[in-house]
Amino acid sequence: EAQVTQNPRYLITVTGKKLTVTCSQNMNHEYMSWYRQDPGLGLRQIYYSMNVEVTDKGDVPEGYKVSRKEKRNFPLILESPSPNQTSLYFCASSLGSGSDETQYFGPGTRLLVL
Amino acid sequence: AQSVTQPDIHITVSEGASLELRCNYSYGATPYLFWYVQSPGQGLQLLLKYFSGDTLVQGIKGFEAEFKRSQSSFNLRKPSVHWSDAAEYFCAVGPSYYNQGGKLIFGQGTELSVKP
Image 1: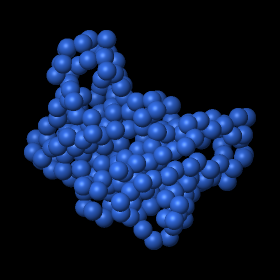
Image 2: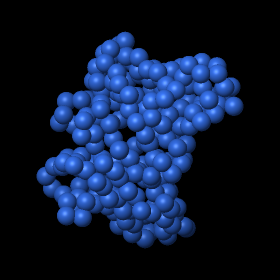
Image 3: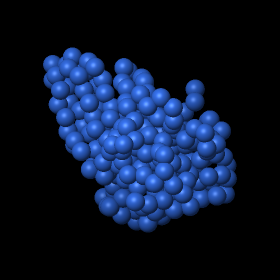
Image 4: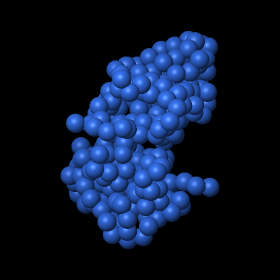
């Protein structure tokens, strides 16, 4: 089954404790992105990657890191989480061919930073 | 600047009634347009998309949307709402003019409640 998976689905942590949220897609997609969803703001892009070893900042990158060492994986790293990073996070992927820009989303990771 | 506006934060309709959710966008080129649905505690599911061609597009679950270039709108409609349609609906436009990994710009979302 074609899908985007994220782990963990739920996470409670404390300020300053490094964490990683994993994302994997099995559709051989070139493009991958991380978004955060906050009430009244919709989804905003954090980081994106257009290929292996090619990553760049989205609209709200502060406090986050990413890496793309393999095509299928795109982990999101919070080196020193703060309470303002409490949010719902979505990983997404798309073909990147220019002819179909449909983004497919993972199930989401709900993060609470105390 | 590119943006998407969903004017209605919350809508309540009776089961069996028709539904229209509004979406207006600002974009510098011909956009790709999407509607996603998010059920409580769930991820985002693609309802339908418009890339080109026929401006009336059909999606899953009986939804349709019409692209009106003159009004910069892409409203979502359903002729008869079911209780299971209660969810949050997001309109999105993309990809970013500068591509940015196919970034989508999302509206704020419209929460739909369905009365029995």
